[in-house]
Image 1 (cartoon, rainbow, N blue to C red):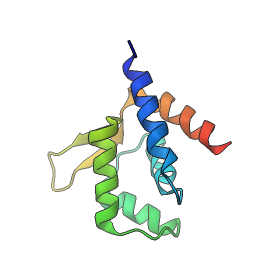
Image 2 (image 1 turned 180 degrees about the vertical axis):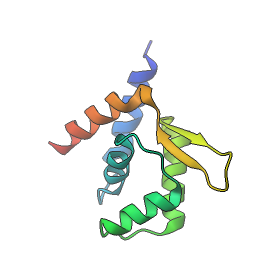
Image 3 (image 1 turned 45 degrees about the vertical axis):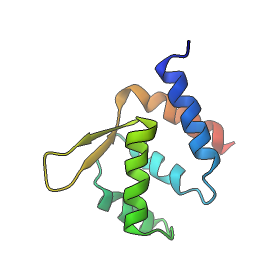
Image 4 (image 1 turned 90 degrees about the horizontal axis):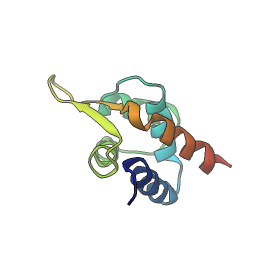
Length: 102
């Protein structure tokens, strides 16, 4: 039986294997910082990185990281959803990003 960490690792590796332009890695590296971000924050960061993305695409990507990968925590109490990387998965995400960079 797989641990939850192993399942997340497997899903994350599969998710990043389809990252043709590196945008997913940029977003995950942003979340590794430990800060909290709205979709708008992530979109602005990607624009600064000269990524060709739409706001709706970024919203979909962050939402997918939250629901399908299960690695993000979401706060929906304000006007905008605020996302952060769950502490339990910081080590796994960092290890995957380091591994895929090689």
